[in-house]
Image 1 (tube, one colour):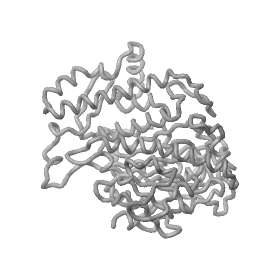
Image 2 (spheres, one colour):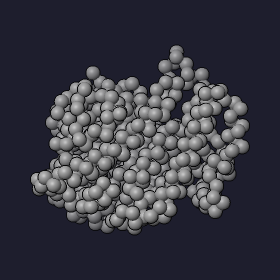
Image 3 (cartoon, one colour):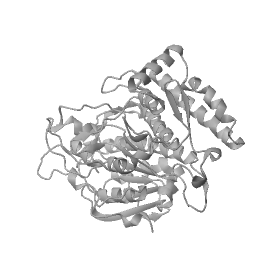
Image 4 (cartoon, rainbow, N blue to C red):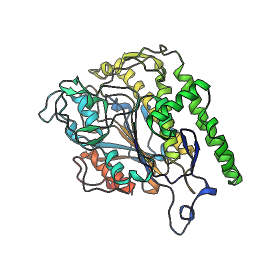
Length: 451
């Protein structure tokens, strides 16, 4: 889903029912944005990516701390962006533990991931958790962009019913919470996310225009050509090329959405019905959603995003990587080496998609200096450590990006045992320009993000 504001500092291309945000271009930048005297560069962004069922820690955790650590098997896909990544060991989500509430670890893991708050055990309408870090940032800093935040996912989940030992499905299906009782629904259809990102007017008007384009078999770019030609005349040579590359990229994402929507959805067996427009290829589904986040950040449509690669306790199979077993079933490995091998390949597959996202951010120039990745903080991980033990300490966490130069990346750091993961969120909010006194069970900031 996308929460909406009207403000946007970027110039846009307009068409009937469309509003295509543009990336930063020197020809259109204000003096303040490029002035070396002000020190103003590009805004900072945050994204949070959730994976379920924990990881196989022996193949996740680097052996050495500090710089120049060797990437273990699961993290090897990050080799091209290793210098932009912090691997953090030792963080804990205490409120993901039962604390007297009995079974339901998976539901708690999603609910606590960004809130650090103990969810009320109920499968009724009286759900309660906490405000998530993305929505704290959205409240304090989201008004500067058209969309205050962007919530994406790959599995639709359910908003009611019993999904995990007496916990409502709302807990398992959401990581973003705008209030203690209000989860923020996620968009799982790449086509809908794309159209909301570039649409204008009411949702009904956007849907009508999208249907018209599909009937006419026209791209969204066909509707803004006149505005694009007018803009080209105002740009310098480098920015003309940049605009052309950007629009080509938008069209390529649009083309992939159309191709994936018509692909054979039975290519892989799925655990739920696939709505029209959702790719049958899981990897392509994830990457299209990553592309949505890149486009949203590049055009400054939003600076805050969350993405659930799968819902808590997901038992999706991974036939695309020759793992036909259900993920959740495998996570209860009981020390079985064969299951360990399969789990680590699922974990590595997820990290491959993270690497795709980070590399796209790194390749995208942002502002007068640096890339989107330089100006972002991307938190990836799970609120369960080992899927068999269902433990919530020593969580698998990666923080990518340099936070506008405020993070000393390229290291593996170990924090003191039982350090709340919310301390990381405190540090991210501070760097985002939206500091708070506390979030969840935080006890302060993490000093080790810089040295």
